[in-house]
Image (cartoon, rainbow over all chains, first blue to last red; front, top):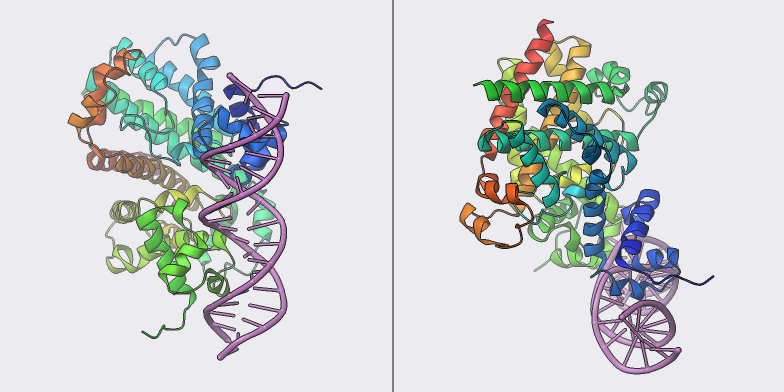
Length: 218
Length: 218
DNA sequence: ACCTGAACACCGTTCAAGT
DNA sequence: ACCTGAACACCGTTCAAGT
């Protein structure tokens, strides 16, 4: 079969698929080339190197949010908007659990780009939306910082937990004797293993919104 | 000078120092061996491989909290205890900004170990303390989850920001024309670059404590 | 028991050469 | 203009050999 001419988007797209399947540890220029029926060295015509490729992967995935939920539905309130962004980001994190943690891998290009919203387009959109809903400049910036901190913590924990997903029954079985030194842990083991991540996320988001609302009032 | 016989702690300690200075990307068995005046292959007598070594580094750093603030000072309330743990963890993250992000690198060994408190000893201590202060089992587990999520998000953002620490003046200089497409970002640029991380952390922690307190009452 | 030296199967990346 | 092949300077890891 005749190969199409390769371009940068092909390479980035292939890298996303590769990491989703095999993890970043396995990503190799030679192996990625093979999935594209090309020698590793051909990739260097389109990306500057492995590091730059990984950065492009992260950027692409984050920017993809714009093609989905957010741009299409117009929010009725800033609370609405927060819910949209948060849930879109959550879906993204769960779709790409092996890519999402990379948002913190390299330091951001600029101090005002905070993970996981690491894209100029994104941050601009976010701040503009809050101002449209009547936030002062300071309130918008504060909300941006609070919101990113919440998203990062909640979603990283969620994808980390997804990596070891086992049932509470299994949890109570493994390492039967190894918890003897940790009595409290042993007692609460089953409760700890229960997965309520969706509820926790929603509750946390509600509290965050409540907190920002009360900051606005003061 | 005569070399002491190497042991595992020497290797882990050297790895911590190496990563602190050069970052994990630069950590190589050969280079680490060189800092210990030993061939790379000698390290394999003490650690199973590079991955296991990195895991040991993370574990060691987290466990070190016990030698510091926490074990010595007895807290007077659970609010006190939260403040202790949070600030100790914050100090640790800022002391080892290149190591802290690694707490999320590999999935935890067990579903009840959540970053950044990834140590059985730690989680046991945390849950036991909350129960001593009158938390029910469910309340303790909920508080553990909320607390870890907050710590992870807040501290990861803080060390990420530390990596690109530049003054607001510098921030307003760089990429002078490159923000033309992002008007809101451009306007709020200086505000975004301001570093209030200590205050944000304290405020976030206060809100977290408030939130847990109201959950206890209900 | 602990460390070394040589070796193996990989890497990322460069560069001249092909088409 | 785009891709290939050979090469370079590294990796992690193994294993037999030294002491």
